[in-house]
Length: 136
View 1: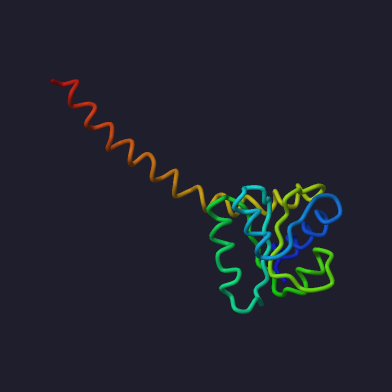
View 2: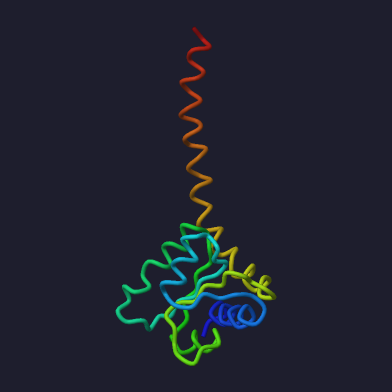
């Protein structure tokens, strides 16, 4: 299991005791759409995979870290339920805030880098027509 996976499961366990979780694909999706999710974790062994396919895309759009764990059983156990679950969203970090912050930078830097490069190009193109009327 990767370090990121272990940290995500740890964040869920800590948030379960000191914060607030939403369990299940529908609840995690709603939390993402409403912008209240701080971290989303999904299980890789969900069948069919279409059930959770939209979650990483939505999380990326919202700038929220999304981590995959190997099984639903591990995810359910860390969320404190006896059955497996396909997705969990942390909506109140509680004491897990530091762990979630550690998971964030990797996601954000990839998402924000292309946007910063695109904007200056647009500004340069806009600046050229503004200079021409000044010459006349």
